[in-house]
Length: 298
Length: 283
Image 1 (cartoon, rainbow over the protein chains, first blue to last red):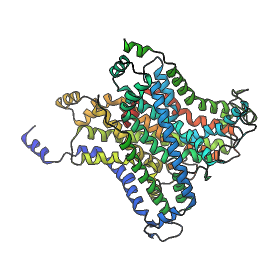
Image 2: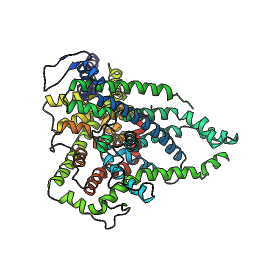
Image 3: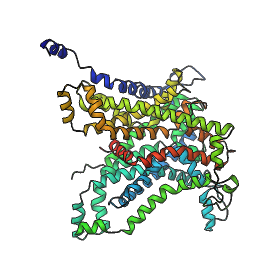
Image 4: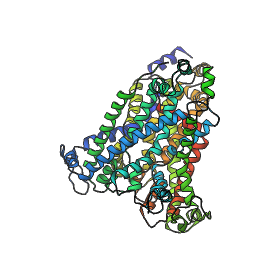
């Protein structure tokens, strides 16, 4: 290599890294950043394709949401989905992780089975569970009548609001708990055995080992698990849509953005609602991280 | 002593937990399979049949080889979901691998800004960009096209895929790559001959997770495809369920068809799924 080519190379900026990241940058800027910013701006515009013109309207979209009874009902529903979902997912996730904490023959098979509901489409899981909750052919009704707990088949979905929400949320919990369990399990695997040995020598009970060692040291994993549960439950769509349709007893806020935008064709209000859901998701994720996450070093 | 006692202790509580995991994960799936092997009359019986009394493949035959509106839609939806998931997975993995290699092994102006900017988009809920993406695709004439759906999938899954591939590449030793470049290999040769073979488990994890995410999509393809030409199986089945005249046994068989592929992948390639999920979520 001559001195000339070395000098030429120095002068020319290295283009290869830019070529490698260009497709990624193009897709993310064009299909994520620009749409997100566009959405943020349009939330303050009147956007109704069937009834132009589009013009700036300040906070009118937000005001119309505040007076929309379907949206307010769905706000209550979504809070219930999120609270029930996060509680069940966290408790079940920690419980399942504990059951898998120690190695045993066949553990990898159990983990494979555990992951299964996470890997399946949410809407199809809704159909799977409709065979359990259904009023005419459902397994739950069949079991309750067999045990003489009810005299005749009941309508579970769509009659009582909170029961409907609980039963629908169980279906989502079925889908998202595997990842929570896996995240907590990964955190548990990092806890050194010596800590448990020392506590056993000190005569600690299983419960105090759990409360004093396992739980505090698993906090990073539990925090990540709770954040993923929060994001998914706060944005729940597939399960209530399939199991209960548009009915007010179970519609979620994300469903309302869909109805407002694609059925009422009021895109401005849809942008506004989706902006509010996004802000709530980011804010609450931050709160969960602050409350639950602790850096742990061994 | 304590260690042995701890490791070998047969906690009945733990076995209860393991039994719960197996039942909880498998029983709903058993139930839909059970129903799919029954006739309509059997499905309607009270109490329900916990085993198919006369197992029949009639529902599957009707869907796979039968004539009529519903089977046609299910077959078209199956074709569509396979095309959309496969193509978007291939594009996502290629783009993510190239970018991850640059992020993990090269220094360039704007690297950190771009890297963390891409990751930051993961914090947004997926549906935050639903309406603008629909309007963009609609303006570009890409509604009811594979291109539209695939572009949206790729943009949604790229940040996680890049993150998993980056973490995987960073964990690989650089010594081999340095040796290869001393021997005169170009950086692209280092990528294809040294890094990719070593990073193959990471590539497989990324591909599987991307494919499973794509297979599970519903709201995006629902909005981006108004007719059967591009609707994936998830959208088709949900539409069937909404038409209340579709028999439950047939619907169950369609549901089983839609979960067979992801279930087989999740079980058979379980190790890659678990590694990818942990590489993508923890840190």
